[in-house]
Length: 82
Image 1: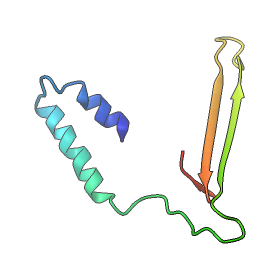
Image 2: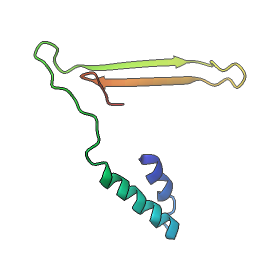
Image 3: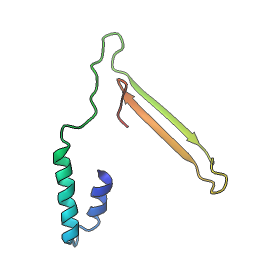
């Protein structure tokens, strides 16, 4: 979502017909997905509200181009949030 909005926002100073059509397409998409989302389960008394974080990295794992990779995951009550 943010990629598409960021892409068309580059043309805010002089929008053309194709840019406005893409903006309308994004708005129609948002209107059709209002009931989508991540649902969080209720916290039990014995486990409470638990936030978990995981990360992994590979420093210079690509020996040819010398690129590093990383990833992360945050979960709240076992539901992914980031």
